[in-house]
Length: 193
Image (tube, rainbow, N blue to C red; front, side, top):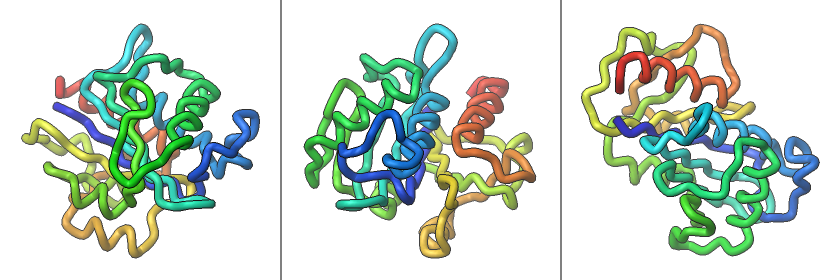
């Protein structure tokens, strides 16, 4: 099963002008994005080829910007935040309306969060602490989109875009986005999905 994680990064900068030494502050919590990329793809000695990670940046100066990471095409990416941040900076150098590949496996466009949800062509799951327990769920599709928010969560307007999505919980507690991704992978790995 292909797993596609969608993150809305409410404050992440939409230009390359942020310091790799200050991704939480100067990057608008770009550290969260880097951790989610790490959690989406990295195994002990390899990458998950069956995964995509899509992040929509909503910060200054020119929102929105969307990056799409495709596990089966990624190259030159190490697991550390600075390496991932450097590839994000490279992608933000030349943002265009239409999606284009900035480095192998990383695509950039001016699409917004609602555009990404409209393009979803399979089941959409909203990861939320008030949802149904993921342990009890079955996934029959060959592709599932998992939507999550950053440290600010999703707004009521964003949630209205997900009214037809299934709410699934991985914990009764509110967890960090990158931890949510790891737990989803763990549950699906154990189900051989």
